[in-house]
Image 1 (cartoon, rainbow, N blue to C red):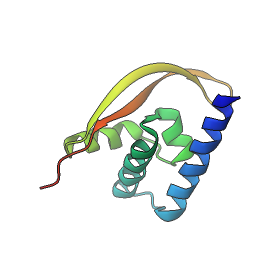
Image 2 (cartoon, rainbow, N blue to C red; image 1 turned 45 degrees about the horizontal axis):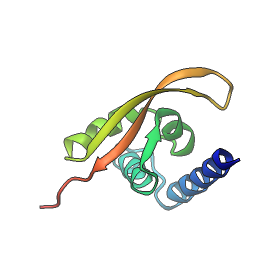
Image 3 (cartoon, rainbow, N blue to C red; image 1 turned 60 degrees about the vertical axis):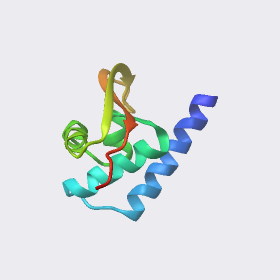
Image 4 (cartoon, rainbow, N blue to C red; image 1 turned 90 degrees about the vertical axis):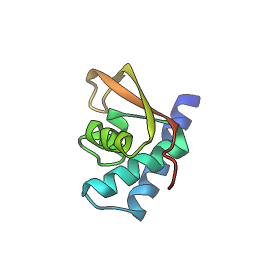
Length: 100
């Protein structure tokens, strides 16, 4: 039950993020990913694709790292909404880049 409540909260938060900043360019996708990480601490590849409409989250994470954000990757097994089991990355925001 707690897992369902957490998923519903994440889905609701992701919809709000999408509503405020929808665009498919890389800058907008990075912004959505970073905002989600700030609020929830972690984001899986499947979450990024299904909740944030970011189809290549690994590239956005790589870009965020280049900007100085410390993001750890933990591999896990998750099930897609369609029922398929996959080994996916879960990204954890460890610290943000320092502002100049």
